[in-house]
Image 1 (cartoon, rainbow, N blue to C red):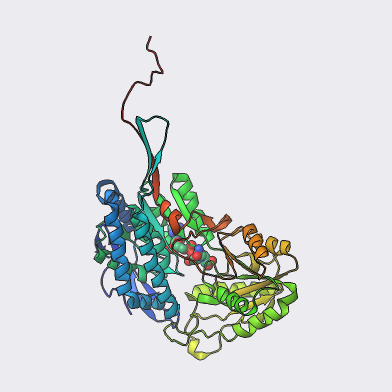
Image 2: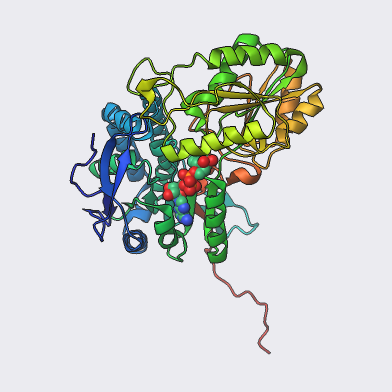
Length: 496
Ligand code: TXE
């Protein structure tokens, strides 16, 4: 299935164009290895032209000063079109990423809710009057669009993650260049066509797609960009943050996590088993907030792990278009090799392999990048399998005996994106969630979020927030306007 056929896939200054050197990229369906589409692969020059278009549109165009009501109406039109095209977009996402159609539909619903949320939020003025103690002075703090934004997204939730950036950037009145992952650009290309139909003015939303290594410098190492919003791996995020620091460009980076899921012995059993399993194996573990570290109280650990292993072995994985599939493949062959290397590492580090750990034998899965749910028991913090983000269906198990030890283990990670706590003791639950240094903490639940609440990380999970009011503020500058309605000399220098 092709999104665009022979249509161009880059959108620069309001025009759809092919890559300037004719470059193309084949996109592979990870469920069966087939070619999903062939798309334009931008050059560094294309990326520079996209940034220039966004710059000129911001500096010379009317978009930054467009009335808030018009911007909100545009976001609402986009949301309506997303609803209209939900099935098509979900199908594109499944073909490109391998995730099940059910998951893709949930993603599109999430994208709709984000556009609706920011359409509402931007309509509420956040300007602030400040009393300076002089009635002749009107002092106010207003929010203005930050300027040109470069929005770089990863492959695990392609349309969802770029929408968490595009929606607030548009609401704020910014212009932007969107760069989806080269592995999964199709839903973003389809989205930009839809945004054009909704009436996004030329030059406001530009799109380039291609290798980050090739396009990165043109997109980030330039004074024409005011904000870089990036979601991806720690190594790339660090590189981008370094460039941004040198340029004194604002950078908001979300860099994944190594997320603890702490289960006390008094936790409700059924929901705990179920959500530990879902929390780590949903989307084959390719989730930044995946609960990859089970930290379980010693007294229930053997039974708990045995039950998890029993159920993990029954998870049905297969082509995301098959309604019987509960989870899909890994996003690419290259990523499967990375996950396999982590499994081999876990074994060599002495972790006890309980279930999984080998490619599936089923011949119907042979052409896809499938990997089974895998659990390692008897892990500890000296193991890289416990400290590094594997981004695959791998659960490690550590055990604790006291509340303090559970907290210590939960915080013993360089990341700090998300954590889960399960206990039927509400007071203990509150104590532990407050002690954990992670951006989102679920108590007796796991994985849920909403457009209205901020998302982001402590420590090396990144800087800045997406979603919620802070997710809009990233795309705004604050300006203090001091207006003296009755000018008079300051009288500081006497002049004699
Ligand atoms: O990510 P990259 P990769 C983690 C996960 C995964 C690892 C690597 O552990 O195994 O990162 O994945 C663009 N300048 N996460 O290699 O490289 C790139 O084209 C500008 C966690 O796919 O970080 C893509 O659009 N951009 C994560 C985006 O950055 C550059 C989700 C992310 O790619 C660039 C995905 C450069 N120099 C992976 N180099 C999360 N936080 O959820 C690459 N890119």
